[in-house]
Every structure is written in C-alpha cells, then in structure tokens.
Image 1 (cartoon, rainbow, N blue to C red):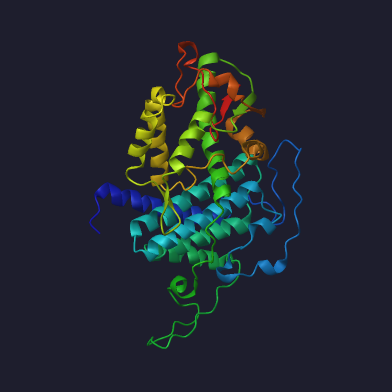
Image 2: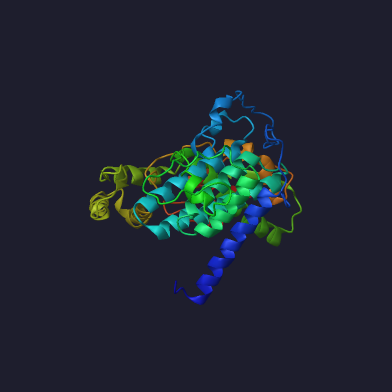
Length: 388
C-alpha cells in the first residue's frame, strides 16, 4: 500500500510491539501472574468488603472461549471487571465498524484502543503488585487477534499459534465444519491458516455504560492527580505524602438548568441516540434573551449549551444527564492501592466539596468573577481535585 514512509514505519513498529508483547505475556517474560483463583488486593481501606459468590464451573465453556459473566468471577477485582467491560465495548464497536465496511474505525478500536487497554491492565498489575490474572490476559489477546485479523492476518496468525501452543485458549475452538464449496480441506497441524478456520468472533456484550464511565473517571483522575502533584511539589516544596481528594457530587444549579432547558429540544434518532436539532441553540438563545433574569448570564449559558451540544455530537449519550451514574468516592477508595502506588503517596481521604463555598465566586463557565479566588480550582462532578 502506498503509505507515507513514516506512517508505514510507525505501523510496522506497532505490529512488532503487538507481537513481542503477546510473546512476553504468553511466555511469562517480565510478567507476574497471580494464582488463578486469587482475588487482587485493591483497597488499602478495609471498610467495604464485597461478598463474592462462588461461580459455577459451567460458565467457563463458552463460544470462542471468552468468560461471559465477569460479575461471577470472585478472582477478578474491580479494575479487572472494568477492563473486561471495556474490552467488550471495544469489540462491539470494532464489530459494528466492520459490518459497515468502515475499516479505519475498525482498526482504531480493534487494534489501537485494545492495545491501550491491555497496557493499562499490565500497568495496574505492576503498580499494585497484584500481578495479572491469566484468564483475563488470554481473553484480551484473543479479542485482539480476532479484531485485527481481517486487516493483518499474518501477524494475528503468529499470535494465535503461540496461544494454541501455550494452551492459552479457554477452550479448544470448535472444529471447522467441512465446507462443501471448497476443493480441499485443511488437515492436521500442518495447516498454515489455523486462525481463519478455527477462531470464532467471540460472543460479547456491548458493555455497561456506567462501568465504562467509572473506569474512564479513574483513568482521567489519575492523570490529572499526577499533573496536580507535580505542580504542587514544584511550587510548594512539600514532602507530604498524605493527600486530600475533593469531589463534587452535583453540577451547580446553573448548569443543571441549562441541561434541563436543552432537554426540551431533544429528538431521539432511530438508533436511540439523543440529538439536538440544528436550531436548538438559536431557540435557546431567544428564550434566554426574552427572560430578564437569564439575559445577564446569556453568554455563559450559551457557552455551556454549546459544550453540551458538542458532547452529544461526539456520542456521549449521557451528556444531558444530571448526575454521573457511579459513586466517585467508592471508585477512588476501592482502587486506593493503585492510586497510592501510582502517585507515590502513602494515603488519601475523600471529602465532598460543599458547593456553597464556591457558588458565590464561580459562575456557569467555571470562571471566577472575584479576582482573588480566580486561581482557586474547584472540583466538578467527575473531575476531583487533589491537595497534599
């Protein structure tokens, strides 16, 4: 294919990385696995124990060898169930893209996003010291191989062969049925193309949106905490290793009001997506300008409305929801070991930021009228702030 040279180089090195990572995971190079039935240590706070039920053995044998019900897996922790949920969501999106012959998007999900997810999981295993669960690693590799195989069959064949050799498929894939329209039948171990004969597209579910949001919240919070800690250490020269994390439980009333106003204009598309009609913002503006109380805030209201409209356009089906659908405090505390180790702190506590402290100084746009407090960061739902 006539790619630009550097595009081709990048793609080849990405594929090489895929091969070598799969090899390392399958041959235990620099990878620590924990015992198959051992749950991970996730929270340093022991105030909420979840009671796990023994899972039934018969769930394990499943088409394509994929574990169907992660909630029955007592040996998977919160993070692992969330990773499995993401993998399912990604596979659905790749599947959808292939069916629409949209190969660019299929590659984005089935290759790049799955690789990022796999790296996030191996990073978690190292950082928490828990090690990885072999079953989940094998599932991720299998998802990866199947999702990429229409585009890069040879590389995927290599990885699939390694999986077969290492007995890393949860069950032997179903025997290929003889096809009447073929002149020959591949036989025995000398077949060179085992993957395209044997491997089934795994059964998958579209994933739970709330779990996805909680997972993204953890990932984004970690990245933002890292930046905040660097900033604090650079400015205050503090060596404190104890942190306070402030969360906000609900949007300021002004934002909730804008969302509720936009809800009046929403249309539902045939695939159950919410869309705002093209003239929604114009109609909202007319409404705001005709209201004496709202008119002074028109600029901020319209800015925020445009932001919500863009979120909807980018496929965020919950952009108009008030509230998050997950418990920020629970997500942070459940993953306290990961957060502490990743940030190099010894502990943190979570407090709810009281909105009345800030309501006087911040307006809809989140910018402050009062010059003195303009520097002060304020948490919003899903965007906590960290103080050492």
